[in-house]
Length: 361
Image (cartoon, rainbow, N blue to C red; front, side):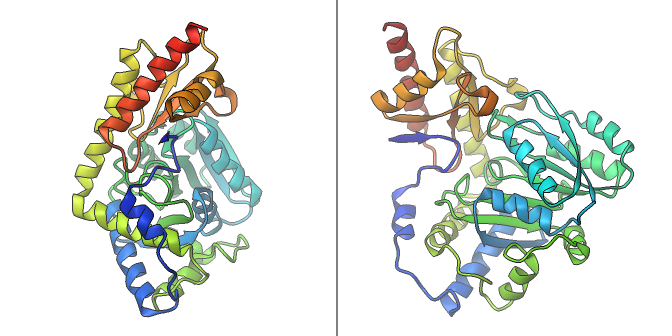
């Protein structure tokens, strides 16, 4: 099966072999060596001198950790949403009794930084701006650098970023862009199984943590920081995923971050070009199209769910379908992490053949 959903990603044989390795003592010296190397490599990939932690959780866990470690009940928060996962970020903030103001943009478009500026000018007490970098439900990448500049121009608010489906595959120089918390997850561009949420925090975010009053225990980064100093996790980690993630982080460093980003860009362009060659229309404008997932409109004469099912059952290509209000209207091709040109070629061919088969029924 050619797994082309936007995560979890398929894994090469060497990563699968590592994930099947025997367990070790997570309080012993071997784990201490692993977590030290992983932390240094993760920070290097993100371009940050701040703090970084690995939590056994899904990507949503990294989003929740960003909220609970920096905010307090009653804090005013500005949510920027361009799709399903942006909405989720806002829902998490509301679950912890923060006062969330939502700016929602049409699905398939990116956020307008000037609209953010206008809203911030009416929120002088805004504590944080929360935003998804890469909206995998629509195949759109947000201009996080421009948004962050606006936030810092207009306020002292923290910039909390859901980078679950972007970090490691899309440029995201955390310190250069003034980002305060970046959350991501192992099963995306990092070429590892699900199970590890990853967060990085700026000094500003760490200071905010000291005064945060949201109740927390499992996601309290203070525990992760204290245990990191002795080379241990505060709780039992997903060791199988740790083995794979350690390998993949080191592989990114050895390949070179710029080369990894360039490779993602090339596979994204290949997917976009392939869809256009079939006469299909991209869902977002090409100027904001993601380099980790391509969203394509389904022709009016085709049942979208049937297309995804046919490509899977007949041609062995697992495409992503549309989510929520986009169900049946788009399909998505994931191209993050380990993706070879032939994976994309096979995917485009499966779409072409499935369209023909469905039209000939």
